[in-house]
Image: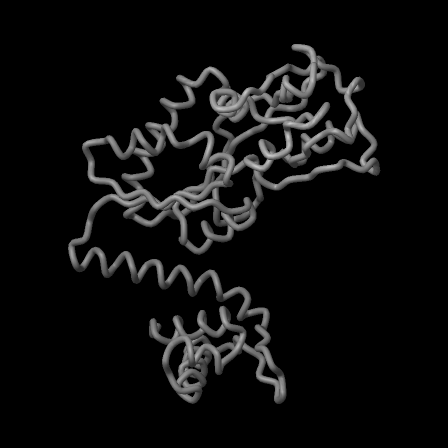
Length: 299
């Protein structure tokens, strides 16, 4: 299969237009059309609908399915080029959500970089759904995520969990060391969604229709709003302890605990050969980190 034809198809998908794909690739539109036709002929299937007067392209169902396959072709070609050119330093592409990359895994990353083996780490933060999509097309090699999405091409398993704790600013609030959900004003919560089981627990104590003043989507934003009268939030204990070192936070425990946050390791069912050794090294340091962390429970 011609790699240029595949790259052209992906450029069309990205730009949603044959003319914009031509601009992106510095080609004529006729060349882009020729490459697309050649690819469809080789695959014996139609990838893109071509309707007169339509501003943006529309993928057929086969075209949608081919996107991940095309990305895997590109990844395999990249690895082949590295092998031919004897470029063999170990490299691992790791994807996780921001809270894990920023507050949990840095000790693991540092240990790997101190390892005598030459190692290149590519670390990126995404939403869980995006991590699964990137794993599917070999854009990343391993994902550490708080949510598991079932898919036939990927393998996920729980590796550790940690409890969620109650945090507040003692300069603005006077919460006890142990707090009961029924005594808390949910309007004062700085809410961050910690997953399905957490949301079920949350809804069992507070009316889901009751308005919460502040909802955030990243952990760092909680620090911007916690210094307010009676404000409170719920955090994984490891993150709360990290914040405690740099900010004057009070950490309390729940009398009625929310479910622990579970972390999953996700890899491709059929990993690329170059990934096997760096994955083994990463998992060794990750296991050591889990076993030595007082706030994590190993599965």
